[in-house]
Amino acid sequence: MPIQDHTEMGFSDTNGDADFNDLIIKMNDLEYYLELFTMVCDNASITEQRMQNVMAQFIRSTQFFDSKYDTGRAEVNEDIQPFSNFTIDENTGKCCL
Image 1: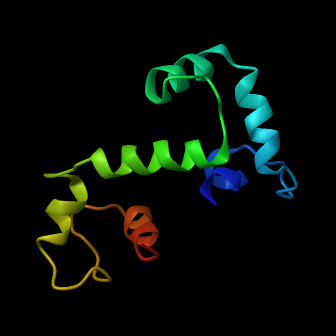
Image 2: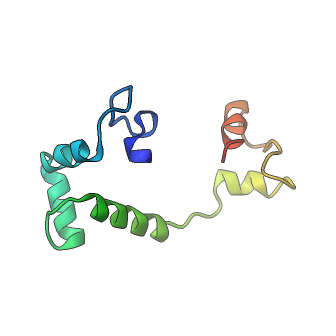
């Protein structure tokens, strides 16, 4: 759903009326997406299933350590506690993780 969420990705209109096919049409009009899908999937066909697979693989391959979050989390007993290295806004935002 993040792709279709206007706040997260800015794709759908403010009412969230655009659907996944609209996104695929938009991506097919951008040459660099066709090139990227060809490199990753061996051809330029963009489908919802392929997008899900590519994003899932990317997320699985991403590793983080020594992040600002990791440092702050090491100082507290629970995630809900404020991290001393976070701003007020950052602590407010992490409450919903």
